[in-house]
Length: 200
Image (cartoon, rainbow, N blue to C red; front, side, top):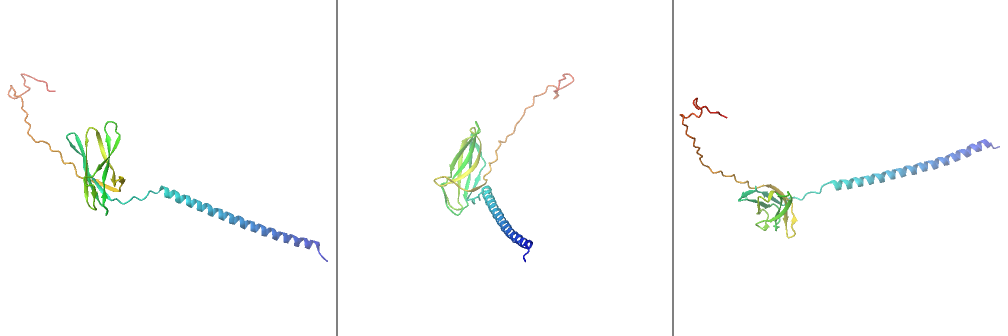
């Protein structure tokens, strides 16, 4: 003799197990999808951060291959003499070396760049060469070093700069100045009771 109620309970339990299995598989699939999405977003964020850091980081500066010593400007007969020394501090020969100066004009304060070749066109390691430029004092108000160029294409060269020769002290003409005092008529007094004078 079968009990219909018992059969019904058995069928419900079977159906409940199937639903649990489907729910478990679905939950597992959702968890895997969430984990993969999180891993993708994290990798994408890391790539963006690395790209941003690479863009903001400055490029490493090349090591200087020369030192430029800038002399104090000299004034002679209405002209300004700009000059200095370039020393090759690298282990290679530098050819067609020139110094780039930026001059500021007095009339409009505009900048003007000039290339000045060294007196020695080639610098061996440790060798020095001088540069010099003569300009009118009334045309330019200031000058500054902005670059060092080498080769036939005037490519830029890494360098350091420092102070060169100081301006010699100005010599003042020495002499004795004699001031003659006017002779006084009244015994050396400018102001007397007989002739009172107002003193400012």
